[in-house]
Structures are given as structure tokens and as C-alpha cells.
Length: 347
Image (cartoon, rainbow, N blue to C red; front, side, top):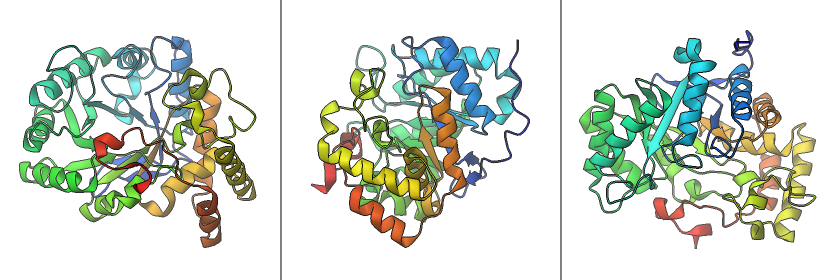
């Protein structure tokens, strides 16, 4: 039976302008970093995407190397586009990125013009698309002139392979330089994708969050749940199917007694707000409008439904924020610190 999207899908999800551009993004977006490789049944992937779209989540975020194996997430999403979303392409914002290792040899990663353009072409082929809505430089390349990397993004947009250009995990200084280059080229940087959560606040210490607002660049915060730490799943042990159990971007050693005690206290604050801890963590990232959209991941449709409920209460009192700060102590979970050239915990 063919998929038909929920008629009420646009009734509850807020859509926020991405910086000063004309693009609007849902307050919550779905990332396909985990659970879209060949280690996950295809029907699960379809259910995740269908659930997201039915809830008004129109933005699906990928990268060339998502899997495993690398490229398989884009291939799977391409099948979902063909089988389920074919009639809805103009209602979707689809993004991809290039920057991390994708194929052997000197041209298979980082930020050269050769790699970025070849990567974009390969991503489009895997997904069966003529264009993506957003294409990112996935990480700063210290050995390639920034003018070359940004020039490649400009060429990708001008060639019609992407509608908008973005960058990911660049620090404030590099962001200012990248934005200036793209502005001079006439292809503005529309969006930045940094990691950001209660337990990973480097964008505040670095000044990036303020810089993006000053420059009129939108933002999509990935890992707002700190690889799943900001949920109740670990309060009673480590579930077998969790990231910590599989050592997928969350080292179980980070789940110390003190960290779990703090998470338990945060959960009590969330309960008092009438939210789950997941919902409060997402709402915290979105507070004040400084972040355009929160990028979530999921292994079950119910998790997406839980996350989407965050939009029902995005406001915080000063007292709530103070109490959150008391327990939301930064953990060494910024796996992307090298790319952003920032130390952990401000050290």
C-alpha cells in the first residue's frame, strides 16, 4: 500500500526562518547519521522517515559517509524518496555534506574542490536526485585554502546541484572568514551545523552562536541530546541496543555515577515543566531563537514522536535555566572539537 502523508502534518510544527534567507526549517529536523546503514532493516528506516514527515519534520539531513558502510544511508534514503516521498519532493529539505573519509587515496576526504564536487555528484546519484537543498563543507580543512573550499560550494550551487551552501563544525573565526568569501562570491552561507547541547556548549564559549546571529546565518544544532545521554534510557543501566552498548559515538565510561545523578536531577526539572527530559533538552537548545532547528536522530518512530513534543513548550523561566545550569555540567563529549579547533570544556 502506497504511503499517504498525514493531512495535518503542518498544524503543530513551527517553521523558523534560516538566518536572513528565505528558507524556513522545521524547529526539529531528522538526521540519518545512525540507523540508516545496512545494519538496520529497511522497513525501520521507512517508518522513521514516514513518522517524521507526518509530524511536520520536512528536513532530512545526510552526509556522504553515513552508513555503515559509507554511502548506504544516502542509498537507503534514495529508495525511500522513490517509494514513499516521490510526490512530496517539493515539500522536503534534503541536505548532504562532504569532508570526512569516503574513498581511498588523497582525494577522498577534506575540502578540496575535486573532493567536494565529486562527492556531491556521487551523493546525488545515490539518492536519485537532481539537486539537494543544502550542501555543506562537513569540516574545516587546515591544509586547503578556504577560498578553494568555499569556491567549490559556490560552484555546486551555481551548477544547480544544490540550492544553498552551508558549513559544519567551523569555529567562530573560521566561520567569519568562510561567510565573507561566500558573500563575495554571491552565494551566501545560509546555515551552519555545529554540535550543541546542555552538556556540550562550545558554541557559547567560542562565540559561534552570537557570530551566526550577527552575520544572519541560520543554525542547525546536531546531537542536542548529547548522543542520547540527555534521556532517561541510561538511568537504569545501559540498554543493549543503545549507542553506549554498541560504542557508537558514546563511550560508556562517560556514564559515570555523577553524570547519571545530574541527568536524574535534570529529569526532575523536565517533569516539573510537563516534559520528558528529551523534550526539555531540545527545547533548551531552541530557547530564545538563537538556533534555527535541532537535529535529532532516532532508532524507533516513538522517539521521533517524543522529540516532536518539545515544540509544545519552548519557553523557560530564569529560575528554570539557573537550575538546569546547576546540573547540566559539560562532559567531554564534543567529538568534533578537532574540526572546530576548540578545546574540550574550555581547557
